[in-house]
Length: 334
Image 1 (cartoon, rainbow, N blue to C red):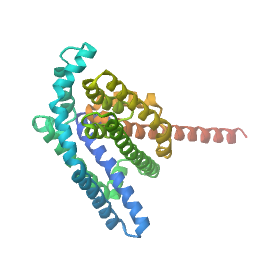
Image 2: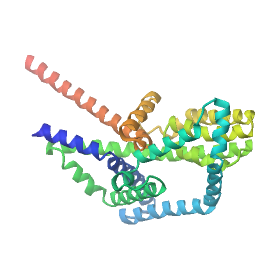
Image 3: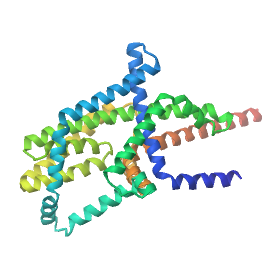
Image 4: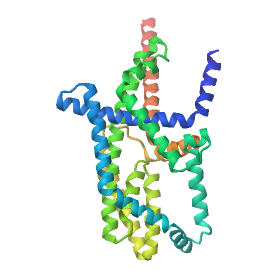
């Protein structure tokens, strides 16, 4: 019965992979909101409720201010990039000798959005901005509810474990939450720095749509190693339309920024998070992308963080049991 229940549970999770990705995204944002609320509580002495309300309000104010000051500029430049997409594709085709690049990119983007869209798969709506917006609202709503009553959901999850395992499972959950908090905050700092520096560099080089390209670079920084490479592609394509030397300078700019981040920024902001080898991150993103689609690519790194913590705790528990067995054996021999 237990084996059958486990198999049934795995199959159920497999069928609900997109929902699982949305829930994990909501948990990740809830961890960030809780971290901000805890900081506000320590500084102001406010209780959990008001601190959380202030943290949500601060996030809303920040997003609204960014949209007010930069929204129109970003939308205009993004529209310009979209309108120039056929020209950019033809320019890249000329340099790379790849035929029908525009149709290939369009079909692959459509398939990726379809594989990562909960609404598109469940209700049959066409994939696109509407489905992405609905998923985004679902994640944010879930994050707020998770952050308001974290103990409720924590206790409900721990109830799935045998009573003797619950203290250990609770400690592991705490370790995961703390590590994800530092990782997420570090990623946000890194994304902001990369976006700002990339925008400034592209403006100095005279690249059109520099703000939009810098915003793309900052957002895709959330996906380590893979994201920066992907963000460089449209910038290089725009650079090619300005000339070969301009494109070369764009390549140099992105390489210098990424090297500076790896040497200076990453060790500083991620020192309290799990140290993940680059090879593990790349192949984990690939594996989660194959399993869960676009959601797995976006959330591949935090999922890897959780997996590494679980494996480390499994190894610790195994070593502890070995030490106990060895001690008991030595005592019996004596």
